[in-house]
Length: 110
Image (cartoon, rainbow, N blue to C red; front, side, top):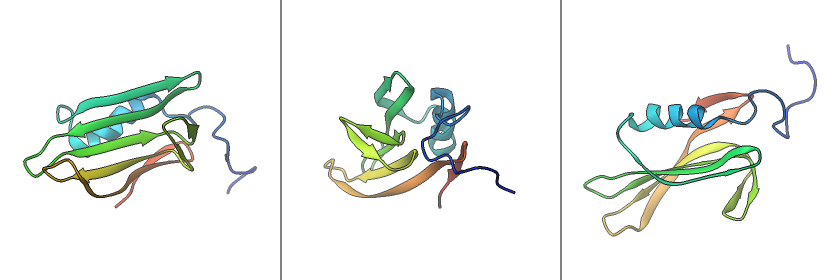
């Protein structure tokens, strides 16, 4: 049973993931030691952008967390983590969403 309106503005306890929660999702996706930080940005509400890189023989893989909102680096309609695959020359060759923050919980996407 759902009471009240949906949390469209991500207000309330647990609505904005902590850096530790985001790190936990990264570790589920790539392992604890398997990545390097590329960029990590915060504002008055907390973490809003975190990019990590996993190096591989066939090219790098980048995971990007962005909190719902509009920022100078881009905008997101939902809080999520996306993956981008790069070939050996550093050219992006594909990507997709790998996790979404829904109703205060992370959901991994296939």
